[in-house]
Length: 160
Image 1 (cartoon, rainbow, N blue to C red):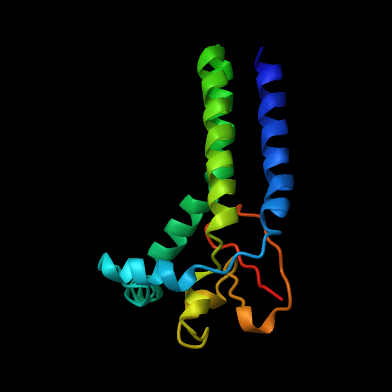
Image 2 (image 1 turned 180 degrees about the vertical axis):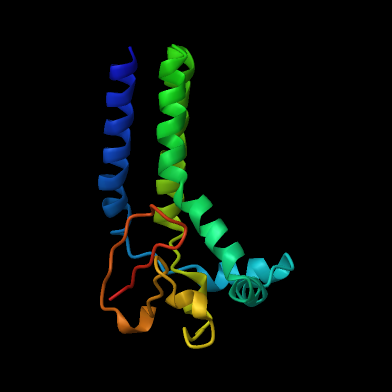
């Protein structure tokens, strides 16, 4: 039962990766400016958040490690449920992952967005965390066409 569920999860995640490339194909315009306007309307200040983390590199590293542990968390949940012989809960978890993936891909198709910081024309010289390992910033203006799966909140692609 556990092996079948792991196989189902692997198939779902593989299909999610493949479908993300298909989802990136429609030529809907980026919504970065609209999302930024919503953030401002809500009182969120992207530059202030960036300065906060830039001034506290240890906090940034902890947050980056936590965010980077998402895959490990999935493995731990699956492993714990198998070890506890909670196969019904494991099946519910797999269904939840499939539903979340379907919602994410649907949103990705109709509301594409790049990295908020590229839209703000922020220079890596001003913010050293941009130069830290694992952080990539790309100017959307310098790219011809990049198609990236929505595996992160900051996937970047450009319209030709």
